[in-house]
Length: 622
Image (tube, rainbow, N blue to C red; front, side, top):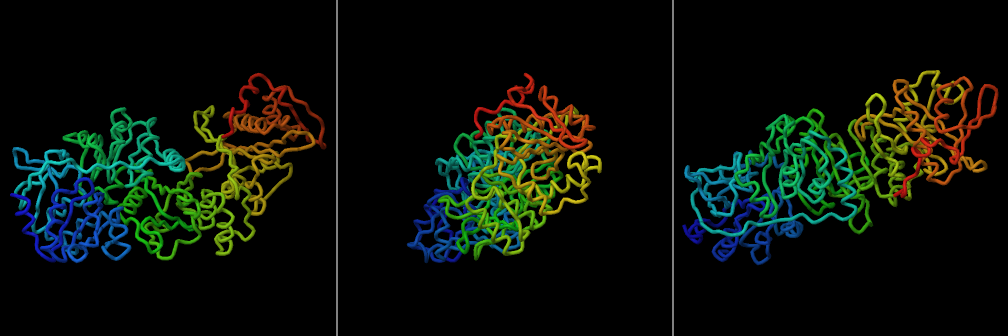
C-alpha cells in the first residue's frame, strides 16, 4: 500500500518500534516524521540508531518521544538533556520483555527483502531484537527494499505476519568504524595476543574491538559468535583465518545478530551459508555463548577502578552508551571452557588529562561488570588478569597498565584506601621504562614454549611462589646460605628494578596474565668493573632443557645494549652446572672470592662466536 496509507494507521500515544542500526527503515521513519502535526506522544523505541533521521529534534518534542535501549551518538545529547529516554536493559533480555509486554509494542517499522516464492521475506542485516518486535507488535509495517540481502538463519518472516507493505528501493544505511589512533592500535595489538588458533571470538560494538581483526591474519581456524559483523571479517574468511571448524557450537558457521558496514559486506552475506543470523535472546544468552569452548569476548569500557569494577555505560551521571551485550558476553566467556573476557580501554581520556584507570568510579557511574565478572584488562601499556586475584594484586596490576603520569597518584590513593601495603614501592612509576623489546617466546629442548620478559613490579607474588618451589639445595646454591622466607619487603625490592643498573629477565609458562615463573636471571651493575654480576635460578623441573642458557644469553644481550663491558658471577666451586653454564659464553676468567666460592668474569669482546651472535643487541631498543 502507499506509505501514507500504511503510516496513517499509527495513532496518538502509540509505541512504535524502529528496526536496528543499518536495518532501520529510513524511508518509513522520514515519512512518519512528516506526519508530526497529526500525532502527539508517539513513543519511538529503538535499540541502536545510527541515522540522523532518528536524532531527537526539539521541534518534535511534544510529538515524538524517543526511548533508546542503547544510547548511541544520535540520541546521547537528547537523553542527557531529558528530551529522550533511556531504558537500561541487557540485550539478551529484550525479546522476553517484548513478549511479556513489560515493554509493549503497538507498531513495528521494519525493513525487509522482497518475498520469495514461498512468501518469506528476510530481515537481512537486522535480526537482533527486530524479530521479537515483529512477533509481538500489534501491527507490522515493512519497507520492502530489493537492496536488502537475504540472510540465512532465523531471519525469515512470512508475509502473513506483516500487516502493510511499502515498496521503496533505496541504499541501505552504511557505517564504517573510525580508524584507531596509535594508542588504539597498541591496545588492540595487545588484545590480539590473547587470541589463539581455534578460539571463537566475540567483537563488541565499537572501534577498538572491531580493529582487533587487523591483527589476526596469522591465526588459524578461528570461529565467530558475536553481536555484529562488518567488512573486516571478509578478508579473514577469504584467507582461511576464520573457518569455524573447531567451534563446538554451530561449527563452520559465523553466528551473529546483526550487521553494520558497507555494501560490500551486505552483498557478501546475501544467501551466504557461512553465516547464521539469529535472534538476540539466543546470540547474547550466556548459557548459549558458553557452549563455544575457548570463547574470547572483546569489549570496551570507560573506566575501571582499582578493585576491578567496570563502567562502560556512563561518564559519571552522563549516559554514554548502554548495558548492551557487554555483561552477557563476559559471563558467557567466563562460563566457557578455556574462555576469556577482555576489557579494552585507553589509559587516559582523549585529551590525556584524566586517567581511565581510577581509584574509584566517578560519581553516578554505572557498574556494568562487577569485581567478580572482570577477567582481563588491556590498555596500551599491557595486559593484566584480575580473575581470582586479591584486591591488593588487582590494584598493583591495574596501576601497572595505567598511564605513567597517573601511577604515583593511584598508588598513593590505593595506600590511603588500604588496598596495598603501606610501604608499597613502585619504581617504574613516573615514566615508562619497561623494555618491551625484551619480550619474546622461545622453545625449550623439550618442545615446551615459554615467554621471556623483564620482571615487573606486579611479579611479587609470582616471585614468592617461585622461591617457595625451590629445594633447600637450590636456595643454598643461589644465595650461599639457607633462607626460609621471602617476605614482602624483600620480594618487592627484587621486582622493582630500574631496568639499567638492576635488571631481571624472567621465563614464564602458562597463559598471559595467568602465568607462573619457571626461571629468573638477574644482574646488578658494578660501576668499578663496568660489568654486571649475574645470577640465574630455575625451577627444578626445568633443569636440563636449555632454559638457563637462554636466560644467560638474554641477560648478556641486554647488558651489551646498556653499554656494559662484560659479566661476572659468583659460584660455589662445587657447582659444576653453573660453571658449565657460564662457560657457554666463552673462555672466562676466575679467582677465589671466598673459601669455596669462585668469582667468574668475561668481557663481551671475549665471547665465543656462538655467544656473540646469540647476545647481539637489537638495532633499536624501541
